[in-house]
Length: 84
Image 1 (cartoon, rainbow, N blue to C red):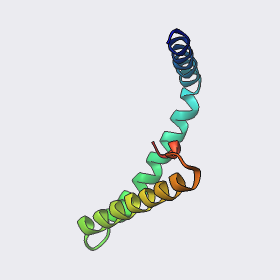
Image 2: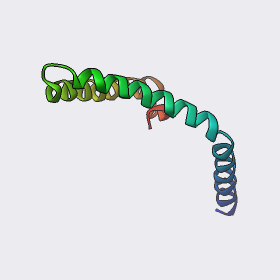
Image 3: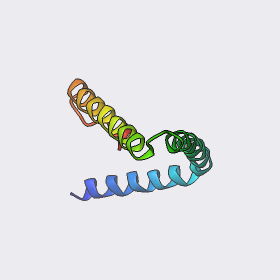
């Protein structure tokens, strides 16, 4: 158990360092994602029935990603960590 604890602490420390170093690139990615989401939100808000448009968008987005996770999990035999 001692080796496993040391390995998990080492992985945690390495992950923390990588996360600290990669903050600027992650910030750029998040800004791009938020700009895209803002544009989609504006288009949905301007539709004839905004509540229904938001509902359909969120439902389809979650349904597509859920089915994709199920198939990728069955294909590779594990939960696809990219969606987490």
